[in-house]
Length: 374
Image (cartoon, rainbow, N blue to C red; front, side):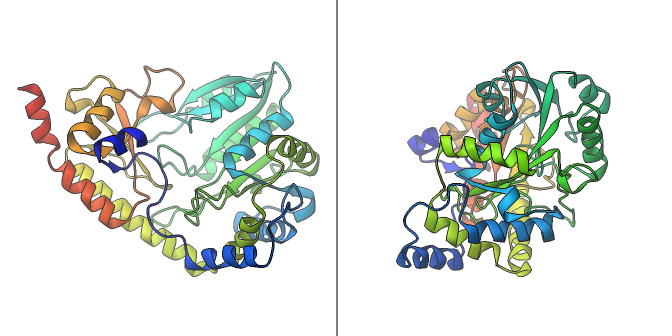
């Protein structure tokens, strides 16, 4: 969709990368690290300064007992962290439960690691799971469940009751929870992000994955991490070494500086994204979309039934070609192509100017639809 957007001179609300500057403190820290010659390999599983900063953040924010040397592996992005974690724990014939819609790499990650994905749908309109259906997905071959909260693409923030239900299943079936928490600081309306590893008995069953990309608007840095119990950490580090050897050393040093930013930074982050969320929701609703307000992350999933399209990909391509705004077809977040065909996903990790321009173009949506029907 980004390529199609570039081809048609559209406003890119498809791919989730910010179009505003990185915090000045991070840029200065990265330049300083290069000048101070942090330019060779770090320890493969992470520069000590960054691992110490991650462990401190995990203890204070996530409420997870964490030791920098025993539990933290720095990776090349959260996608690599998930892949390394799956390769570390999976044996041929294992099964991994995935809640769908899902970030599109989870299914292929599970298959590449040698396991069978078992999908459980989050039910509209609130994108919640049916506890009975989730329980039926677990069995003697279940090795893990992948949980993403705050959730891409729906914007759900899972509540304590839901996480307790997942934790209970992990205990009953003696399996792991791999939890992608990359949007952990982007939550709205006073909601609280809860790390499942902080629940009783879950620290020994959970691999907690997060990173710098979304919180600090550095999606191109590819610095993330996995926090896991010591035996699993040992295996993750081996897989990470085989996959990528190590994340960029100077950017790891800058990452330690990023994690030292105070609470005021996170308050400003949430405030800025709440404002962007409202700008996009107002534009989408004015154009005729039915939108559920996201609770976290920076995406809006919206239905397209009323626009006369039965195929989400055709609508997304028409929207960028005829209206000049790019979004992602909803079916790309589901295993079966027939699911999600009534949805598309927009992102609002853009400047208010970009979102305003998208809003101006979306004002012509109904006019373009009438022209299409005539």
